[in-house]
Image 1: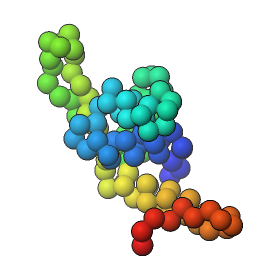
Image 2: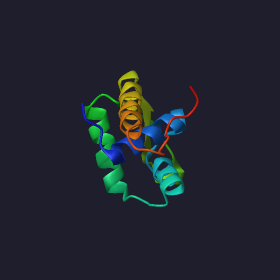
Image 3: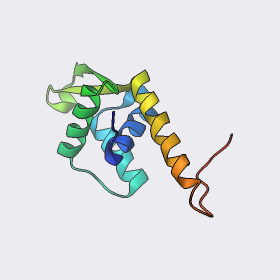
Length: 108
């Protein structure tokens, strides 16, 4: 199954944030790491697609007065999501090996 560039970044953020991954903090991480701040609508659309593909699961946290009684929706990386990231990285490395002077490999 295909993984778009923005979806890959969102998936990497979810995996990095682990149990603390919800909309606002994912958006903040993307802004910090990429220098671009996606709209919350674009982010949620990507999260819905990733959930449909089985790459993330979601659950709702408790309602808080701080959020006006609304619940946070938390996301977790699934094993299928982890495999999709491994495949995307493998493909990127394969292409980079054909470009002289471009070494994207890290570690072993």
